[in-house]
Structure formats: structure tokens, C-alpha cells
Image (tube, rainbow, N blue to C red; front, side):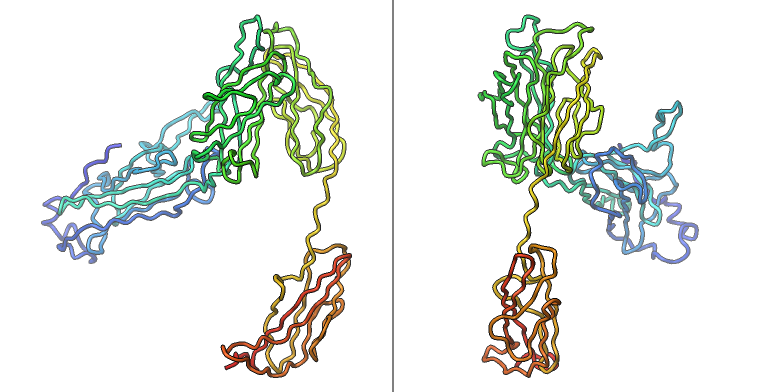
Length: 519
């Protein structure tokens, strides 16, 4: 958008000071360079992956207000000779992909009328790459609204001083999103054909399709381009997957490792000789976005591509070929199983007709996946619908086994680590008490406490409370240089909880009466 010529005071106004000035403030005749400043209510915004529109206030978390101000010798610069004069010009100097500028001033020229989806019309604010603003008391405001891509936006505003004819400017940086850059989701899709013909089919069906896989981080942003392969693709060697192959560059096989560019990787899938579902497992590594050095923290996705021998008539219904669910489901352990169908007109769409075990879902591609959260046997029905609208149903039961019990944390005294646990300081001549507590350990009964070995006079511990007491400790002798706090006595504490017992050395530091360190 073109920035309008900046208005200046007229000669007549400059001559008639009584008409243009008044009220004190600026000396009026002293000129200097402009100082331009720009601030924002917030300089960090979340990524707007939900597509929310711009706004002002607490219910507009993706929008911030930006303020621009210019002064001369500490006083606000003058405005124009009319309300329509444009003084400031502001533009997106960088980061156009992460957000846009808005006026949000209610001016019809800054809005567009659109359908409201209910037969009526509404006006929505326009997005801009650059805007022009008037000056009121030397400043004005506008708005920045975040988009769905993380990054940094740079906004630059400038103003011309009519006295020296120079332009003065300043810039403000706004950060959108806080992307980790590590994989959080992996999704794939076919781009040339979502149904393959098997090798040797006589219906002229294509046997190869291109596949694109997108790897995004936890802010739904593309992962950075890696230095080594960051995505592993493999064909499950069952059903139609037997004999199918992957191709990328000069590599061919049932498993490939590829690299993403701008979060996207591509390869070709070729069918085998068998009808059914070709299942692709796609895995990235969240630990370092690198699969060439092993996969420590897998982030997985599944893509199902049907392989058929012919195009069925519109009246031929599909048939579900999965007789029973397999794989073994366990609480707390990720589960994945692919339902298969043949016949009808692929591709197929799957839906659940009843509730699956807690933590599991059925995707439209026929993948039952998730992490079960409750043990037990659940029965449910599923439906598959082909491209012609014909459908078939099937009933299944899935038993989820109880997960292994969580390991019991080791018995420890709270706040203690290392061979010797140092407690808060005691003051010489003052009774001391400190209650110990435990973390971890087996059993649900209260811990039993005791002191073992040599115990200094006056020190005891509550057998059930863990309260360590020292009756009126005597003023300590100061240690040899370097001077400092006397280390005080060390006692050995034994605590038993359930079948676990811990022996811990405990030190009580001591200061002189009044808390002063030894000289």
C-alpha cells in the first residue's frame, strides 16, 4: 500500500502563531531531529492455527496493539492540516508469512463486506502489508495479528520531518509461536493416486503413487531441514504389503530413510501382487530429529493405501476381511492395528459404531490406534463404506491387559541427597528441632525412625514422627582456619517403611549464640 505524502504546516499557519499555538508546551521555534519510538502491548503471540480473526481485548489472544510516537526536542510532533493527513508510514519489513497489520478503527475503507453464511452480510477488517496513519499528540496506534506459522515479524514505521526533509524511522520485532523444532506429529497422504492396482492387473490401474509426509513440531510448525535423514518409512510385511516397495532417489526397498525439506518428505510407493491394504509406518525421532543414529523417542504415523485388481461396479459392496483384532493391547502401551477390506470401489472410509476401549480411536483409514488407559474387554462394531456408498459392518472384541505396576521409587529422606544430608543450622545454647520425612519406599504404613551408632548427648529422634531434637546444644569450639560456621555433630538415621530400610548420615551445622559465624 502506498504511503501518502506527509503533511506539513502551512506558511500561513506558521505566521499566525496565535491561531496555531496556545496553551504552552512546545517552544514552537526550536527545531531538531525527530525521535521515533514504537511499543506493543505484547511482543510474543501464539501461532494462530485455529484461524481466529483479529480483535482487541482478552478474547483476542492472537492480536496485539502497536503504538508509534514521534517527538522533536522532547515534544510531540505536530499533526497535519486536516484529519485525513497521513504522518506515519508503517510496513512489514520482515516476517510477512507470520502475521499482518490491521487498522481495527471501524473505518469502512478498512473493511470488506462478506457473506455471513446465513444469507446476510457482515464486514470484516482488512489485512495489510503496510498502513499509513495520522498523528494525534505525536502518535497513533494500529494492530498486528498472528498467522498460523511461527517466526519473527519486523514492523518499521517512518515519519518525515518537514524542517530538514529527512525521514526518521524505528522498528519493532514481534515473535509468533515458540516452536521446539522437534517432531511431534507425522502425517502422510498420497498425491497422484489414493488407490493402487496390483502388479499385473488387467484393468489398466496405476501401480505406483507418490506419497508426501509432513513432519511438524508441537507448535504445528515445520521441523527445520535436517543434516541427516529424519524420517523412516517402512512397509508392514503383511497382506498387500508383501511385494510392495518404496522408491526415493536411487534407493528402493521395504524400508527407507529420507530427509524432509520445509517439513515435507516425498517418495514413491509401488504395489505388490496381492489385493488388500498396504500399510506404511512413518517414524521420526523427537529426541534429535535424526533417524540415522537410532530412534530414541519415536513419533509415529500410519498411512493405508488400498491395492485392488479391478474397478468394481457401483452395486458391488465391500467386504471386511479382518476376522479378529490382534497385536495384544496393554494399558499404557501404544497400540496400532489396521482393519482391511476388499471389493467395492476403493478407497474405503471406516467409522466406529460403538465405543472403543478408552484411549483408542478408529481413523477413517481403518487404523485403530492410541494408548489404552483401562483394562478389560470391550465389544464394538465398525462400518466400512466404499467410494460408491456401499457399506459393510463387522463386530469385534478387544481385550486390554493391565499394565505392569509402576516401579516403586526408592526410599529417601525428603530434601536429602548425597552421602551426608545437611539440615538447617542450630544456634548454640538454643533447643533445636527438625522433622524429617520420607519419599518413596514400599508399603503404606508410617515410617519407623531411629538413631544408630554413636549418638551425641542430647540428640534424639521421634520413632513415629521423625522429629530430630537436640536439647540446648553447647556453644561450639570454633574450627581451625579458614574461619566459618562450626560443622556441628553428625548422626546416623535409620528409617524403615514397608520392606525398605534406609541408613542416612545427617549433619546439624551450628553457629554461635545469636547466629554469628565463628571468628
